[in-house]
Image (tube, rainbow, N blue to C red; front, side, top):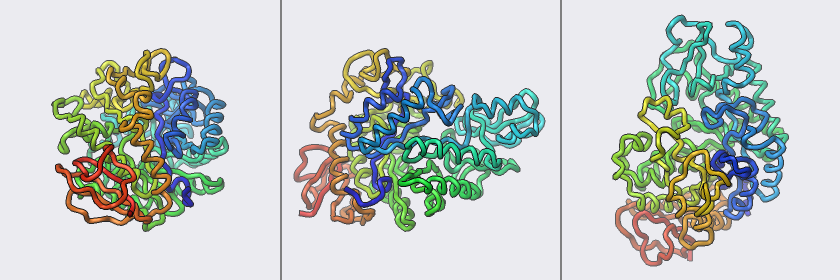
Length: 531
């Protein structure tokens, strides 16, 4: 058992609740479904769960358009259901992180409805960014989802939405907004939540002189100094207010979704700000030892110097599943590939090998690892969903250039048969492919060599051997080998080259491909301890 804070070492499982498990058979995942799967997560070896937004919402952006921060969407259950689930999870040793969405709310939120009903210049409108600017928007800012970041109201004012037009940005210069979110933090902490994942942590404050900015790619953020709405210095005063609230409670934490340049990340990890910030470097690194080492070193060195904990991510609800990404050529643009192809670029077997090896990297590194639901089943992206079923606003706003993020959000297959592969009794809100039968959980649990067995074994070995220190040392075992040693001497070695190499010395604890002895094949990883 680790002597470090749970959040410094934990394996956190991301639950996209709409697609995890359906407890009432209406085709949508819910709190009851999640609660029923808590023993599965405990057996897997999970230390905590992060739940994507479960609040009342019109679901125009998968719940990130929040209509009420103090309740549960009726499709997902009730507040009492959520409280019972949190208590049961904690009894099983599983911490619960709630998703906080502070940059914007839904246009169905009572504040925004009041703002539209009020006059320009009113206190109700001051909670948002309403601007007079005639027939032209106040700036050239673009939505992260595509299209303009400004929409015009019937009375001629413009309101800002860095995401969908249904998600008006809140005005964090307004004291009422700041006080409201301190209250929201306490609301969930008082109900047993162990912390928060904070959405768009780097984007809540704005330069209200509205200068034009350099255009960014859809679903990306511009990493440049003094940006008008990303990574502004004034965001840190707000973060310190939040941290002070968490410090009123025992053993609570918050992790930032901050897509910022590496040199900026340290500011978010100061002792009075976030406990952690996601490391996204491995999402974009090419599959070679040098690039992976650079991506890891960039984050680990900064966090370790500050006494903070690194976090490691391979997939989440916003990106193509990594088993598919790893099967594409390094120069393929995975965001557009489902539209532009060519589809024969995908090498699914290579993607699976690399995904298994990458699991040993992220679970072997010091710090915490975030596992996206279905990752432990080796799920690929459902990249060929037909346009007519897509729900993501990216598909609506990108003018046919991107299908968006629904391919990684297809409901989980629990059984090889049934109307929704065990997700629920009556189908699923997004269609599931036929190949889900082969990778369903009941086809993998207890099966030697399966993805599930790899993750379960890795999480249990990790808990025994790899979490009670925050130290790593790089090893030079050859240009194609990513290799590091933990403080207790356990080594992680991954062959990222094209040919096999002799197995490094040491007692094998776990390999990403079963049955290895004398050689470490291409795209394969191993954990070793000194003999």
